[in-house]
Amino acid sequence: MLMPPKLTISLLPDPLVVCRLPADATPPAVVTGSLLYSVTASADEISIVCRDTEAPAGATVERGWRAFVVDGPLDFSLVGVLNSMLTPLVDAKVPVFAMSTYTTDYVLVREQDVRPARTALKIAGHTVR
Image (cartoon, rainbow, N blue to C red; front, side, top):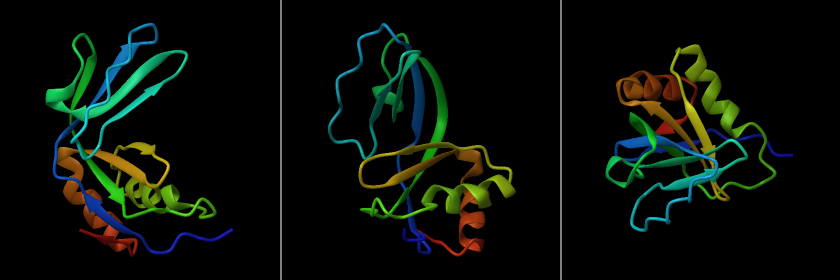
C-alpha cells in the first residue's frame, strides 16, 4: 500500500449545491458540461451535487458550496488521501461534504470556509491552486 503524497488540489470555479430527493424519485438525467455533477442513490435518498441552475425541481437544496478536487487520477492502492485532506480541515473546524469518483476525490466546503480551508490544506503541506 502506498501512502498518499503531498497532494495537488484545485478549487473548482463554480458555486455548487447539494440536493436531496426521496429514494423513490426519478433520478435526474446527467448534465454534460459541468466540472462536477454527481448523482448518488441509496435505499434512503438520491443525493445530487451540481451547479445551482441544475438543481432538480422539488429537491431539498443546500446552497453555497465550493469543491476542492485532488489532481488525479489517483491509484487505488493509495491509503489516506481523504484523511490527509480532512484532518487539517477538522482541525480548522471547517465542515465538509466529501465524495469520490473512480479517478479522484472531492471535498466540498461552504463558500465562507474556502479561505480557512485553503490555508489549512497549505499548512498540511498540500499545493492548492
